[in-house]
Image (tube, rainbow, N blue to C red):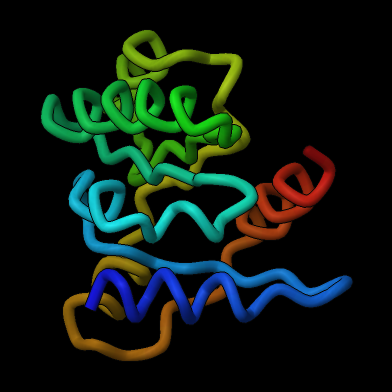
Length: 128
């Protein structure tokens, strides 16, 4: 599947087109070459030790292959503020608040409500 995904992503490139590829959490896709067809790597970081550790590893791997990496802090609330101090702030392009409606939609597998913060994150990503 990794080879198929890599080949598919590489063939998707077209002028003015932006494609977001949502991979499984973790670093397995790096070993399969999926990142080769990507221009930028975005890491969504949840407020957990494991997520912070993965973001550091992905950042290191991205540097080795000369791909810029950006962080989005996810599920932020007053308890998650400490997350900001644990990651490289220069790579953070935005944060998403914890939203009970988003949580419920994800739990039910239904459409996620629109979040104003997402437009700001997309705008920053396209500007970089």
